[in-house]
View 1: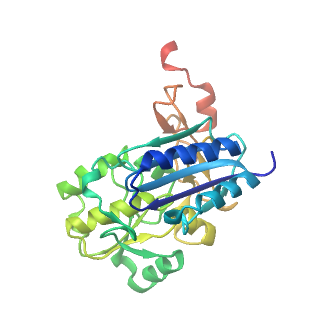
View 2: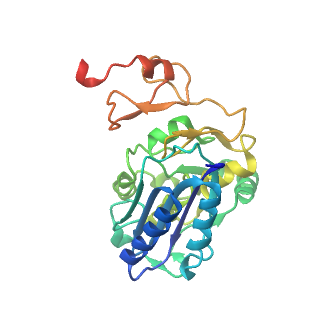
Length: 289
C-alpha cells in the first residue's frame, strides 16, 4: 500500500432508491479494497472511507459521477492503513442519528431551514466583529468535547446525537436565543440538522461552520479559536492539527492531562472514556474483577 488516506463527506439530497445507492457504493469500495462506514438514507449519504491513496482518489471520482453527488465537499486526512476493521455500507432512516427523521426536510439544495454557512475565515470575522455576542455550540457528544473544542463553547450534556432533540425541546438552551449561535461538529453533517432544529425552536441568528472542525483545522491549525485534539471515529481515536495542540483532556483514572481515549473499563468497546495510556495499559477488564 502507498500513502494511506481517509476521506469523509456527506450530501443531503433526496434519494429515491437508497438501496440501489448502497449496493453501488458497496461494489465500488469492495473493488478498490477500501474500508470504512457509509450510511445511506432517503435524505442522502454520509461516508468515511479509507485506504490506499490512489484507490481513494478513484473512489471519489466514481462517486462524483452520480449527479446528486457531483459537488460533494470531500475532507481528506492522513490514515494509518489500519484505520477501519471492515467495510460497512447500510441504509438507515437518517444519515446522522438524531432519532427524528420526520423533522428533517431536504430538497435538492440540501437541508431546508438550516443555519447560515460560514467558512472558517467568516467564523473568525464574526467573532472579531461581535465578540461575546457569539457563542459556539458543540454538536458532538460530551466525550468528544473533553479533548477538544472551540474556546468558550457550550457543550451539551449528551452521550449520543439522539439526546439533542429532548434537550432542545425542553428549552435547555433558550437563553441563547438572542445571541449569534455558531454550531460546529467534526465534518459538518450533524450541524446541518442541529442548526435547523435550533431555528425550528425559535433561534433566529444561527450559523454552521461549513466543513466542520476538520476544515477549520486545515486552515488555522491551533492558531485560531479551536483548542485541543479532534476525536475521530476510527482506530486513530484522535488527531492534532499541529505540533503545539493544547491538551485539554483529563484522565478519568489518575487525573493527569491526556488527549487519549480508550475502552475502559469494558475491553469490548462499549464504554469509551478519556484515559491516559499508562492507566489504560494497567486497567483490569471488568470480567476479571
